[in-house]
Image (cartoon, rainbow, N blue to C red; front, top):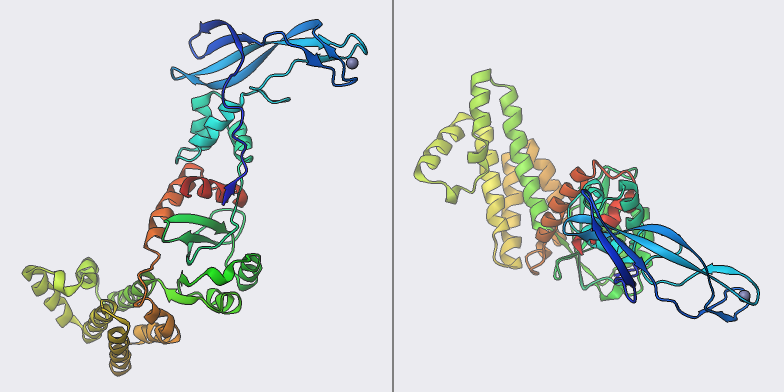
Length: 390
Ligand SMILES: [Zn+2]
């Protein structure tokens, strides 16, 4: 990963400070540069002949919580040979810039926080448009893939696809890249540009078929690991679906009662206190289908807690047989998915990797999204995530 932002020109070097004035909303420093021999840009001869002065207001970093302005008395030299007039050299403001290099660098640093561009603009006394323009100088490009790669997705709000992919190094706990789409064509195109693909040993994903196809094609040596959170979530969804379908068939009071029992049903039974256990038993007497669905959930979680691959494999087989025997339609679909991804799910019991750290990044992304009222331009949103999370 590299950040092509140029961090030169941070300090005001060799500048003569003539006067400092403090106003209500800002402070102003009058500055100039010492007289020096300059080389004519047109004919190359040297000169010290001063032609005239201009004043230029340059925005600078904040000083004592107030924006600082430089009032630069800018000198023009005149070439005595060809009569060309030209501005003196300085190292604090670019040719057509109206702000100092160190202000630009400070804004870029502040953009690593969750603050919105608008609030950063306010702090530095510049426009939001300026902050955006500065941020567009920042760009990230991923060059190498790590040994273990996590791929997850989050809901986007930009002009591109509905879901964006996030690539994370789970060992370094670092966001590597954000992709706007997750279709097979896109994934193949994206990953094929990496030359060190054979270095990747494990890839943690959710059960999204294009990931699997892309990995088989481009990372034949890598082991696919399904993130634990995702198959647990699918099981929770199945149980929830059973409860909700049952609720629909019940009169209002009973439906409401059942709705209030949601947490009781989802909590691991071993973690309930005696009161909770009694209440749970009452709910489970309520309906046969709900009781069987609950048993399937508990058995599934037993499988999830397996110590090793062999135990997990045994428990999963038992669970699949139980689904077959209980005939709860909501769990058939889950069993189908689990069977399809069985090998990759069992891999999650042989390695310690998961997408747990991605959760933290997803929360940070949510804050960024909220503070920016949705980034409409994907490339900018991507850069901001990488700027804040790597
Ligand atoms: Zn000249």
